[in-house]
Amino acid sequence: MDHLSLPFDPEDMLTRLRPWIETESPTYDAAAMARMVNLAAADCAAAGASIEVIPGRLGLGPSLRARFPHPDQGKPGILVSGHLDTVHPVGTLTQNPWRREGGRVYGPGIQDMKGGNFVALEAMRQIRRAGLQTKLPVTFLLTPDEEIGTPATRDLIEQEALQSACVILPEPCGADQSATIGRFAIARYNLESIGRPSHAGARLGEGRSAIALMARKIGQIEALSGEDCTFSVGVVHAGQWVNCVSSRAEGQALSMAKTDADLEDGIARMLALSETVNDVEFRITRGVTRPVWQPGQAKDLQLFELARKIGADLGWTLTHKPNGGGSDGNFTGALGVPTLDSTGLRGDGLHTLNEHVFEDSLVERARYHAGLFLNIGPETWA
Picture 1 (cartoon, helix red, strand yellow):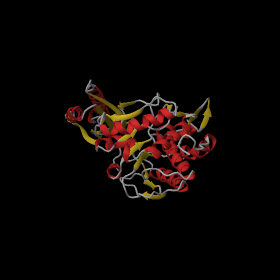
Picture 2 (cartoon, one colour; picture 1 turned 90 degrees about the vertical axis):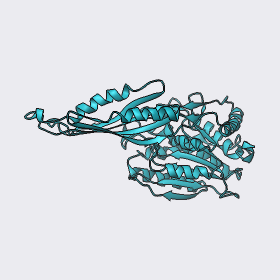
Picture 3 (cartoon, one colour; picture 1 turned 60 degrees about the vertical axis):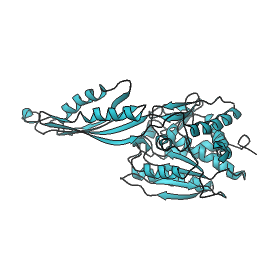
Picture 4 (cartoon, helix red, strand yellow; picture 1 turned 30 degrees about the horizontal axis):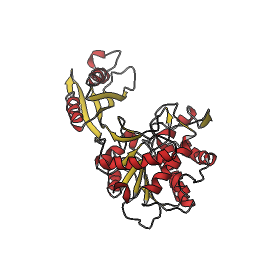
């Protein structure tokens, strides 16, 4: 028996995937993340893995490490790096509930990337049930903070990757089933505007509006965008009472570039926008940075070549391309560890209230992961 004949059951897979989607797990809700980790840990254990729950830090939730038994346990193997956090707050299920419609399956986080994690785990479950043995040990590391740049678990991911032969990330695949080899650099920034409060009706002139300066700065930040580096502001919080001149506004921004040099130039231009205007202070501080994962590295391409052959077995013409969106593949790829990203489900609407996957991609991508797990070996890089 091989990956082409493993008995994947789509109805059973959907039944067991549903709790993963209905256990909502936004990044900033540590208790919700812990519930999701408990669910994933139980499924990993049922698939035959030994599990370790790693406590969270920085106020975020825990991580899960699941190691499958192997005669060469402890030697470099395959690391499946995934995240269990989503951008959707608890309660999003009321707006995008689990449902099957027209060959699509909906729910928050199903494409990015709970569905991909699940089918990779299902591949190992079926491999174990069939009594097959992977050439290399397989470890899953599922983390809680990718959607905010991985501030708490980057060290954990990098250390696990450095002890591995390669890394697979079941992030969503391209619309054409393509994989990702190479990702652009991304920097995040914290924005803060500090003004002076006053009564907006009786003493308006005594106040200094933090909101007003923040609004002007947003335009300046986004005007920095060019061919080499783009800038956007995605989060702003300010004000509490409409009859009070705002004394504080906070925000978050990011920039993206194809090279580390262009990103650093953009960071310098961004930080130069800090200033004090009319007694209102505007501060920009640098947040999490994802390094460039350079496309075209030889060991990545060798890993892709194996993936291409497995895709051909399944009737696909698998291609690859670099990606502007960040992932934890930025870290592992930048370290030079062979990395194959975007092996997850086909779908659309990630990060929206229309997030869904195509139902037929569950078995398709589970079989693909099984092929990777069974065929990646030392000879892949010979």
